[in-house]
Image (cartoon, rainbow, N blue to C red; front, side, top):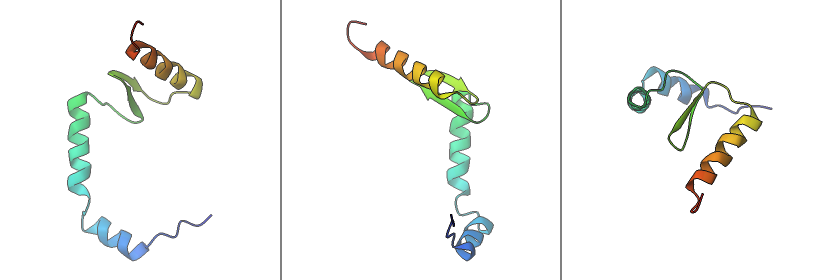
Length: 72
């Protein structure tokens, strides 16, 4: 598999800090929300820190869906 990366454009964007404002805004939002590292997920309002196995992730999502259904 080949990435087909436009290396000159990538280097120009990286060296020119083209996306720094976007990354900084995301970092600040993460700080505001209490994100302490990656990976970090929010399932509804519940934070999940670190790697989560597929079965656990599914359980969290199913529980969140159940909570949002009428007549739970």
